[in-house]
Amino acid sequence: MLRSIGPVSRFGRSFTAVTATAATLAVTAMSLAASPAAAAPTASPAAASTTAKPGDTCTAADLGTRKPYIKSTEVSPTITHFKGWFVTEGTTGNHVVTTSTQTVISVSVGATGGFEGSFPVQTLTAAGASLGLSVKVDASSTSTESNAVTWNFNQPGYYGVYKGTKKVTGTYASLNCNRVQQSGGGWALKWIEGPGGGSFTTFTTLEEGAVRCQDSVPANSIMAKAQGLLDCGSPAAKAERPAGAVPPTAKQKRDRLAQSKAAGQDKVAGQPKADGPGAKAGAKAGAPIAKADLSCGSELYRITVPGKSLSWGAPHLRADSVRLRPSTIFSGNLDQWRLCNVTESDGVMEATLWNLGNQACANIFPQNAGTDQTPLMMESPCREDDLQRFYIYRDVPGSSKIGVQNKYTGSMMGHDRYADGESVRQYSSGRQDGSGTYTLNRV
Image (cartoon, rainbow, N blue to C red; front, side):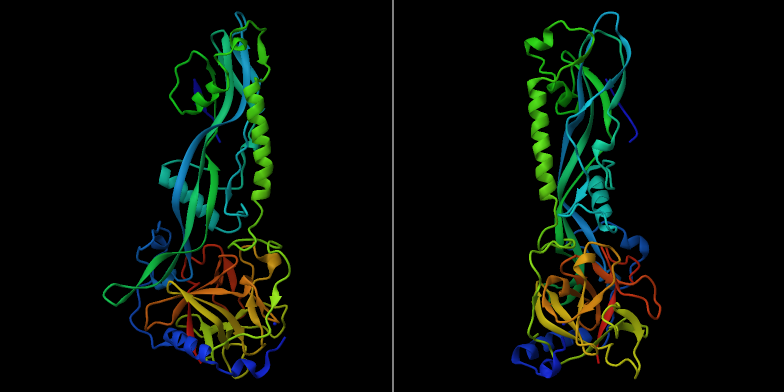
């Protein structure tokens, strides 16, 4: 009975003083800049695109990337459009039925529901693959589908004309590549669960059809959900009526009211989290708090492209972005960085990146926080703000290779091409070609 249809002010000399805490942090940071050792092989593009699970092996080329990991899923047959329809003797045949919206399903990933970059698409693709279903992977909604159903009624009776789909919801985690110490004391690169998890909603292709009270239908199917809206046991269902549309039942009215209220709540709930990865401009309440000082190690580092000469260079002008630049006697210390307020949790370092040349901190501006490929900027004064905090994922000891992730947005740092003047940018999934892997070399 159903068929499918197509679808920071300057800080002066205070930064050069090394406190006991900073000295301890410096020892941690120095392990990043040890002489290179045999590192894991570079991943091929095909390998970079495969599904990963926590504990799986990764390579140094994966340090600047992240992948989604589906933690849970739920599939719910859902009626999106519905109309009660009565067919009498002599009125059988083709009817065009204009249905009413019953439920609206909107595709969303994370707190913002946005689709900037590839990470949301990868998340939904992975969810569909885990269930063996073809699901929507773009910013679509069932409300954009036509509500007209053309159906050939070959018998008189009381019908529920419907459109429906399988609503797919669940939760996901963000996986990052980082060094993990093994039980024997050695080290290996593994995919670990990092920041940036959340929930998702999507749906499969809409189906349409018509069903009667007396029809035998599979339990918990889309057709069964439509049949349940008919209130088949009520006297109204058995009453004689003229051919055509049947007024909505009390149950249908209640369901639509509940759906309308839920849609209003979803609109509020769908706003960016105040402090979560991926939150967009204006998401945080109040202005960031300026820091009077930072606890920085005395060591200076260059963040370079492995095996090549260009490194992260802060701009002379604050309105410009961090760019790949050659390190020369004319660099004016703009190629030198300190790690400040360093912490470590589960083997992942977190730090503020302060530049010696312009006495400012690396930063993603809040108005561009939700935009993929937005450039990495500088700001002074430095602030207690997750937009200026970065996770640093490290290769095994003996290698100085790293990946860098903004704490607030969850995006990885990378560049489009290796060229003098190329901006360092954020990418929701990182650069899958390995160009988001850098080295942290002590000056």
